[in-house]
Length: 410
View 1 (cartoon, one colour):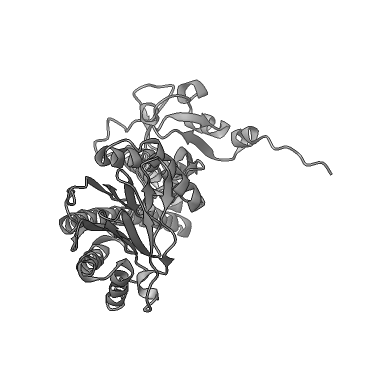
View 2: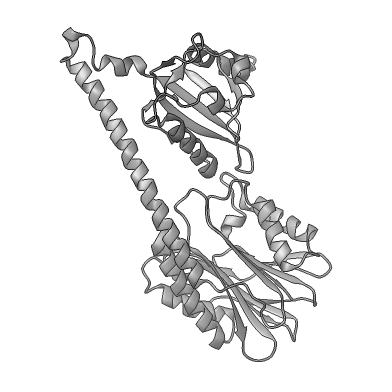
C-alpha cells in the first residue's frame, strides 16, 4: 500500500481546541480555525499582530494579571526551551462587536517550544482551552449550588490558583538565591588580567532562566621556573549556593596544587583526592594546562572535561584531546598527560560545556562550530575574540547551562 503524504498545514488548521503559533517576538505567525472561531477575531486581525495588542488586559480591572502571567510563561519557554503549563487564568476579552465592553473569561493555557536544529526556540505553540462555563458552573443555578460537582469544580479552581501563587513564590525565592550565588561566584573567581606578558580574556555567562548556574570556574596562575603559566577550567554538577561553594573549594585547591606539582596530571591527582572528601564534588570535571613559553610547549591533562583548543599562528586548530580521563572523583590512580608545541602568536582557548552543547545535538557539531569561529576570527585580540565566540556560539536568548571561557595569546 502506497504511503499517504500528510498535509500538516491542513492538520494544524483542523486541530480541536484553540492553537496558535507565536514568534519569539510574541507575534501571531499562524492560528487554527478553532482559535479564530473561539476568539471572535478574524485571521487578518491576528496574523502578524503582537499578542498583547490583540488581547490586552481589561483596563477596567486594576487587579488583572492575565497578561502579565501569560507573558512570563512565554518568556520562560523562550529562555529554557521547555514547555510551560499554566494554572487556570482569568483573562477578560473585549467583545469584538461591542468595543469597550469586556467579557469575563477563564482559560487553561499551555505553551510549548518549537526548536530548530541548534536548539534555538523558533516558534512557540500556544494552546488554550476556554473553561469559562466550567468556572461559572461552580456556582450553578440556585437549585444546584450545593451539588457535589459544583463543589469539586470550585475546589479545582481554588487549588489551581493556590498552586500558581506557590509557584510564583518559589520563582522569587530561586531568583534571590541565584543572585546571592552569582555574587559569591564573582567574588571567588579571579578578575580578568594579563598573565606575565601574555594577554588574556575571561568570561562567565550564567544560564538564563534555569537553576544550573554557579558550577563553572576558571583559573590562571603564574608557575615557578621561567616564563610558565597554568590555565584551567572546571565544572561542578549542581546549582546555586552549594555549587558555588564546591566550585570555590576546587578552584582554590587546583590553584595551590598547580604551583607545586610537577605537571598537570599530578595537579589533577591531588585535586581528585580532595574531591573525594567534598560533598557535592561528585562527577566534577576539570582540565588544566601548563604552558612553558620559553620552550613553546603546552603540557595538559583532562579529568572528563571538553578539550581545550590551540589555534596555531597559521590558523590551524588543534583539540588537546590526547590526555582525557574520567571525572575528578572517579579515579585515584595517576592520570595521563601529554604535550604539544606551538609558535609565538598562537591562542589557547579553554571553556565549559555550556559553550558547545545543545539539546538533541551531537557534541561534535558544537566543537566544529567552536573551531570554525576561532579560525575565522583568529586575528582578533583575546578580549574581542571572547566576545565574538560567545556571540556566535551561545543562543540569542542565552544558554540553559552556564558557560566559562578563557582565552590566552601565547
